[in-house]
Image (tube, rainbow, N blue to C red; front, side):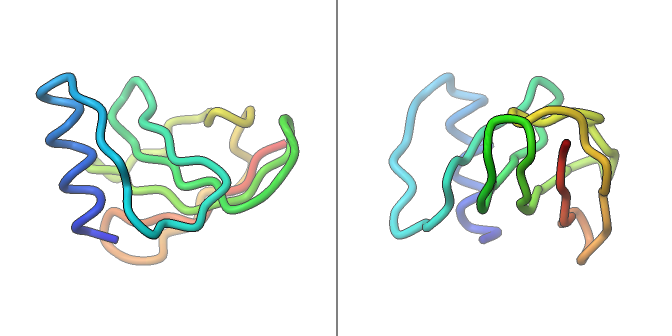
Length: 83
């Protein structure tokens, strides 16, 4: 996963699109603050996933709505769900 985050960050800096190989998520998105959100499952206003936050802060919202849980899994990695 960290290798994928590195590729996403590099593509964002260079303003390029990349293909993410063999990732089985419903959606992968980079938020305005740079947080990378991996949506595992859900519907438009109620989703669950993991996220990579470079500065370890809760962005408050994802592409699925307001975050109601933001739980640290490891340094920079978080479990989240929205509603």
